[in-house]
Image (cartoon, rainbow, N blue to C red; front, side, top):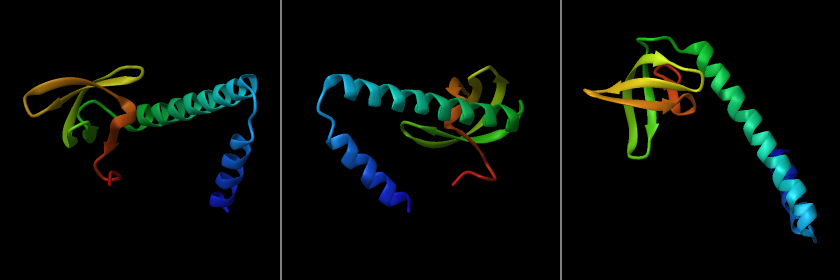
Length: 98
């Protein structure tokens, strides 16, 4: 079902013939992306506490980290002896992370 909807969406995008139409679609996608990221951040805020051990999906792989402080959209974490500030969206609880 989802694949059929995605194919229909892609076909509709292929039929766009003006920059104004394209801008409308791009703005709608950006708005939805922002909503999804906000939801992910809110869920992370609810589930994380200082001292939690989490998995951090960094550029160079997945690392085990400890949360030392939680901010509005980021968390201060420690990986080994190094300290970082990471977006909440890249942190996963140890029991749920895959």
